Image 1 (cartoon, rainbow, N blue to C red):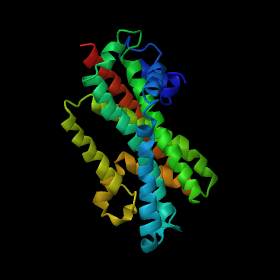
Image 2 (cartoon, rainbow, N blue to C red):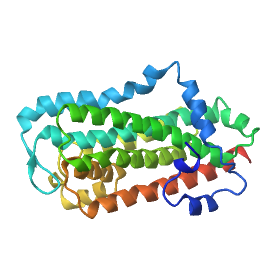
Image 3 (spheres, helix red, strand yellow):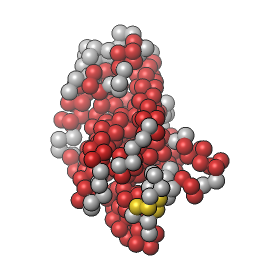
Length: 276
């Protein structure tokens, strides 16, 4: 894995607007460092992958017997388990990426002073940003792979288009990792992380993960349609059910923009905080 492989599409223009002199092309070293740090704590690393499985069992298989079928992306009725599973897949990618790019990054930045030590090496702030985002991407991707395997076991992947759900989940994880790291750079104390939960939990509960968008009045629908997890859920739901159209490209483009902006803000904030 190279540093360039951790950047979104169009990374060359992106690197030109990042802080000058802050990129040595060695962000992969941060990914290797994180892998070594977790080699004895792998259970904690993968534990978050089980949460969406419990939701699927409790709601999709349990409550689903009472709810019945719901309309899919094209209006065709699908089982409740098939309806919520793509949303849980999107949430898996989001949660894995956000956890590492917020709490862990904040601790390394404010308390462990790890990044100050790293700057004594040839690495710069941009390497740190891309390396940590890359590691968060891998964690979110691992959660997504695990949940996709569970979906396959339950027979919820019925279309060849589902093969694209994994790269789509990686794109979602990259975007949330970049946004999470950018947000962490503005945090002043652990109490500020309540704001992260104030954003993540309502998105998880209300952005069509468990029920269709049509249950809301039009005003609330417009609010939900602006939230990133909504686009992730719609992207996953379209791919896993095989209902593919031009609209999915719009959802994917949302995350390309989100990832690019998040990476730029995170790199510039690290440059300000570490080199001031």
